[in-house]
Length: 174
Image (tube, rainbow, N blue to C red; front, side):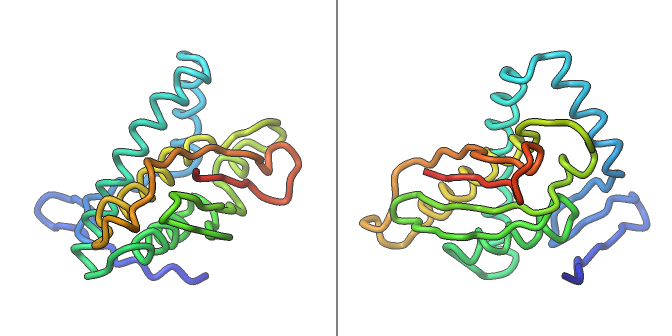
């Protein structure tokens, strides 16, 4: 995959934008070290809950802005979201199956940044992504033109992780 991200830097403010959204670009080790430090301080369960809610809200907002920016809708926005996550170094994301009318999807993540940045660490390392997928799926349903096609509120969880020895990380949206 060749990333073709439009990155613009405002010469007056130094603010970087991609697709008209302000961005912060940081090295993977910097982000992961901060992520692990907060996880250790709060405990994984409490931190995962905070990340889920924040990630859900952020994904929903992102989908709304990107739909407007690119004139796309429905699952095309969800697919675009995963493409952009892949291009930004979080991992390579793919939808294996999806039924937005039931708020269901299965997403595979290969080369997760959390696994790559923590070699030798065992367990489900990629839980931060879970809220992102639920937020994106709820955006798809909330903006569906036909209310009969809207699914129930989505939830998402990591059901397997490369950090457990699997071929890839798998998330289920239900």
